[in-house]
Length: 465
Ligand code: CO
Image (cartoon, rainbow, N blue to C red; front, side):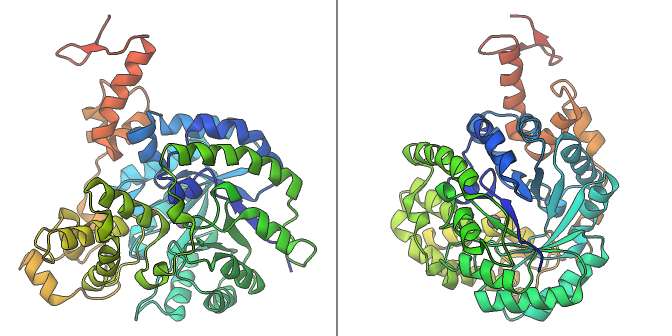
C-alpha cells in the first residue's frame, strides 16, 4: 500500500470555513518556509472565496498573494479551487474568460486546479479541464458529494468514470458539508478505485465530527490523498486536524512520512493567527463544536458561518434554527442541488428570505429564478412544478450548457477597464468582481503615488496630485 499523501488547507479552506476567509497574506508569508519544509503533497492556497475576500475585505491584490506565496513556497505544489464555468465568481462566464483565468492562474504559481460544478453538470467543467491541460496544469476534477434520492454511490462512481474520460488527472470526492459517513466513504472510494486508474483525493470537513473517521475509512479503501488543516484552524467546520491524522497513521502501511515536530512549528505559529481571527470576531467558537445539525440540514461549514453572520446583520440571530429547517425544503424545491458555492449561497439566502418574510417565496432572488430557469445547468432532479410556476411562470427554461449562450466577453472586459488595468490579471479581476475591482484599482493607484486619493480627469487619466 502506498503512503497516504496530505494536502494542507490552512491557507484556503481552513480559514474560509472557520473565519470568513479573513487570513491576510502578511499572516501567511512568515509561515511559508515552515510549511514548505513539511513535505506536504500540496498546499491549498488560492481560489475558492480567497479571491473575493482579498478585494472585498482585505484590500489586497489576489494575484499578488499568489505570486508571493509561490515565491516563498518553491518546493510544494500549490492547489487552487475553481468553480468550473463560474471561475471564482457567482455566475457563468464565457469560455474565453475561463480559459484566460486558467492560463494566468497557472502562470502566476498554481500547479493543480481542483475543478467542480455545483450541480455536478460536467458540461460546466469541460472548458476549465481543457484549458488547465492546455497550459500544462494538473486537473483535479471534483464530484460534489451530497445525499438525495438521486445521489447514490453508483451515481458518483459513474461521474468519476466520466471525469476521467474528460481528462482528469486526479478525482476529488468533495464532501463540503461532511455528509459522507465513514462506511459510505469506504464503499465509495473502493468502487471508484475499481473503475478509474487515476488517484483519488478526498476532501471532507469535520462539521458533524465524523471527518477523521471518514478520512480513515477512505484511506483503508485505498484513497491516495486526503485534505487536513493544522489544528489551530482545523476541525469543526474546517478539515480534520493534520497532526492527529499524521500521528494516527505513523508506523502503519499508510504512514504519511510527515514529521510531527516540523508540523508543530507551524501549529505554534498559526495558533497566534487563530487568536487574532478570534479577537477580531471572524472566528466564532460556535463553528468549532460538533454540529449534528449538519447531518440533518446538509449545511456546509462556510455556509453555516455565512448564515450566522447574515442573521446577525439583520438582528435575527434567534431565527437560525428556523432557517436551518428551511434550507432542506428550499433545496428539495430546487431539484436537490448539492450545497456548495454558489448554490449554497442561493439556497441559504432564499431560506433566510422565506423565514424573515414570513411567507415562502414572497421575495425571490434573481439567482433562485436563474437556478429554476436552468441558467446554472441541469439540476439533479426536476424542481417542484408548483415552485417553478410560482417563481418563473411560463418563461422558457434553458436546457443547453449555459455558457453556450454566452458569446466571448474577454475583449469587452479589456475595453471597459483599459484605463485602469495595468496587466492581463487586472482584466480578470474586473471581469469577476467589477464593483470591487474599480475602487481597488483606484486605491492602488493612489498608493503608488503616495497619496490617499487620486483624481481622474474626464478620460479617466490619472491627474498628478
Ligand atoms: Co471545503
